[in-house]
Amino acid sequence: MKIGIPKETAPGETRVAFVPALAGALLRDQHEILVEGGAGRAAGIDDAQYAAAGARLLGSAPELYASADLILKVQPPSVAEAGLIREGAAYVGFLAPFGNTPVLQVFLRRRITGYAMEFIPRITRAQGMDALSSQATVAGYKAVLIAAERLGKMFPLLMTAAGTVTPATVLVLGAGVAGLQAIATAKRLGARVEAFDPRPAVREQVKSLGAMFVEMELPKDAETAGGYAKELSPEFIQKEMEAIGARLPKVDVVISTAQVFGKKAPLLVTEKMAGLLRPGAVFVDLAAEQGGNCELTRAGETVMHHGVAIIGAVNLPATVPADASALYARNCFNFFRHLFPKPGAEPDPADEIVKGACLTRGGEVTNDTVRKLLGAP
Image (tube, rainbow, N blue to C red; front, side, top):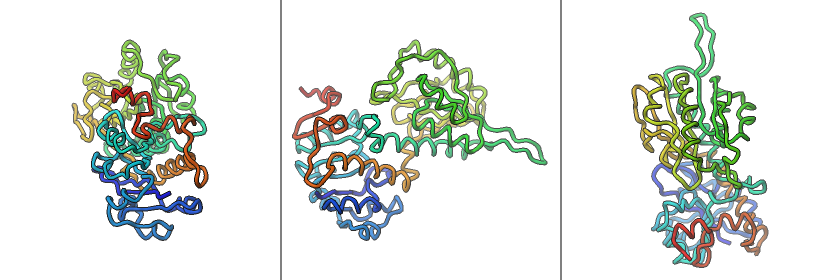
């Protein structure tokens, strides 16, 4: 099989979907790796490294797309890129179908088999393929560094001859993968950390990292069977906002990570609540691309509100491209090996992982959620 790795064209995207260290196993299985020239440059990987690993370099995207049997990508393809994928070929990468229906229409018209990395089920045997989690780890780490750089005080407790520096207090909203990594990173920097999440199961995880869990009555069904947070009732969200609001006057940094898969992010902090933060505080909103957890969040912008910086963080993994690419590439590699466990094998459409990730095949929509989105029968 010819596996194609194109250069990412989305603005600000620096990651690449495949790294040279993974080439050997695929070459041993008689696959051919095609890499567009410059594909890894922004992630610190030059063409010579791919060539040394056994990949074949191609000079243009059209040539690569026309030659490959399967495309590995990070960002969803544009309509133009989707139109370049060879008819009947396969695609593995993020697809963002809820806001990307024109690309799916191209996939259907060109009978492209589309596997969405974000739809891989969150089950034990798919952990090594979970790109949402690997990239959320990077985002949670970087969010704390952004806050630390912006905050006008240091994170750790320092006792010096000139006096004592009190530690910064960080509040993390949402204790999923990104939130837990934010907690761990803030603790490593010496901050006092508090966290809130509506799922009772994460209380012990939060405490194990040395953070205080913000207590309130929690629902028993706050997550789906697939491990994603559920959309909660307006009544519960109001109670949640009251619990959060009580903490805001006492914190220096808020890192918000609360998202609901496929839906707008829950509003947790209103404009009035943001006013409770003391001047100089920093709010990093990792849900900015889904509408934001703060009412004042603007994706890709920093909004100042009574001296508080509200940062609409966008694609933070792309700001750490070397490690983010290595993690994502391993996720794609593991998924590819699951699809094609040996030379000549074909994906098992009945397999839970394959079925969950596959959105289109043979000109038909294969995912119920996407079928409803497109109005397909």
